[in-house]
Length: 374
Image (tube, rainbow, N blue to C red):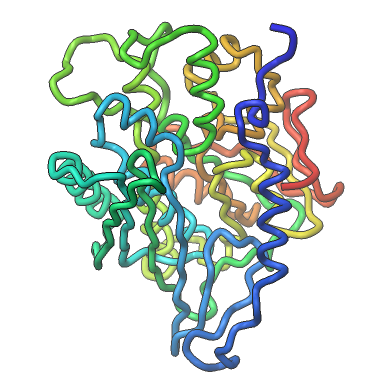
């Protein structure tokens, strides 16, 4: 190829999206709710989930969708994981502010209703509610011929956290230790680039994956009716996004109720590694830096995508989670204990780096992987 593939050439410019979001935020009006009253906003620099006042607690809200991963699900008529994807993209953001998710509502837009498809979506959302331990409190289905050409799915999650227990990043400091939680695969970001690579090599989602699928810390969801030893590319790329309520919500509860040597105050920041990859860490603090010295091993599909698309390493870590779906920044005095506690509940958890005061940037053990803006 004349030039390596990247996300922008696949139709998604992360920098342009960031500028557009900044413009949107700058034009938003101030809240009409007064400080100290229910619904008043709480300052939160990271923006993974929004916090509002509600008596002795804070309510947390997040909204997101599945994105162009749905185009693969639509092509294969495989909806078993997309409800989990939608749930995960929302509740995982709530965890980043220390909130426990409690309820969810979904929004489905279609060119034409199809009972069979909606039944499959309902089953997937039900499974997602079990994994996230939330109530499905309602939803909306809109038929929009002429506006949408295929199914789109998004949702909003509600959570809560006691006042004083929110994780806002204000206690982050140099020397804090980073703990990485493994992803289940590509999750729900970067699919425009995935689809471009697939088209470039002429691969079909029904093809057998040309790599060993086994990877530490994850399983791959099989399509219904398939039980042979091989996995298809469709099964790999539609593997649902990991929901981190188990074990992260349990960690919150342990800090508050169990006889453990650490507390909620030792959790200084949580990052959901979504669109933008490791640059998401920069959202947690406006001046501190981050170094990933011992990264988690990327899943085999990332290595295949990079080789097949000739994608530069920095672009891979800017676009994809590269095997690490969530990062906790914790007090260095309790890092080993927290990591061990998490490791007993999730395979593949490891200490991957540290916070520093060497400038507002993310650096990496791999040369050339560095980010100075989100």
